[in-house]
Length: 263
Image 1 (cartoon, one colour):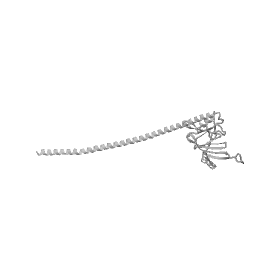
Image 2 (image 1 turned 30 degrees about the vertical axis):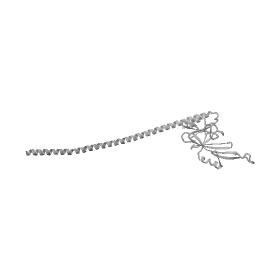
Image 3 (image 1 turned 60 degrees about the vertical axis):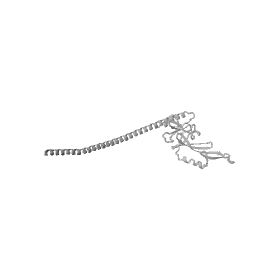
Image 4 (image 1 turned 135 degrees about the horizontal axis):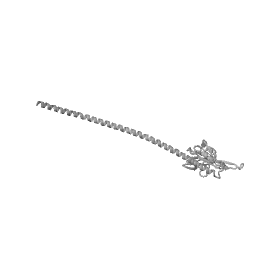
């Protein structure tokens, strides 16, 4: 009987020990699984960050490459357009010069090129002769078209000459019939706009002693002024570097090609 009791006690102790071991093992497994999940999550985040960084780097590289290609295309297009414009203005000017060369009224036609607005395309100035009343015809090339800056048949200057400056001004002077006139124009787009007119006029002012005496009167922009005001009206234009145009090169086929298509 005693042996059975001892066996029962030992069996109970063994069962309790087994249960205790099972209880202690379960928490350890839970911690291990939690740590594993955390590690996997961290690895996923790292991989995601790496992928994002890689994507950002690729995007930046792609954007830089795209911008470089776009810039190259734009530059090539601009150069091509500039080349076309250059060729077009030369062809247009040549056609006009050939037309004048065969004009029966053009006894001694001449021309000059001068870039008044620094756009890379020079303006064309030409005259049919160098007599007193012969003025200068002025042309420019805008938007693929030859533009007459002279306003129809109007010309500038006299003796086949006028003067221009690199900052866009043209001066036109004329003397005759007791009048001296100076007109100052500014190139604005495809027009020469009159900015100031300065005129002196002789008027008969007979006296008993001098029946053919004349007196001078002065105007600036069609308003009478004193002689001092007349003289000072020229001051603002004295600083310009004027270049004479209109009679530089005699118009001939050889000269046209030599000047227009010179490298």
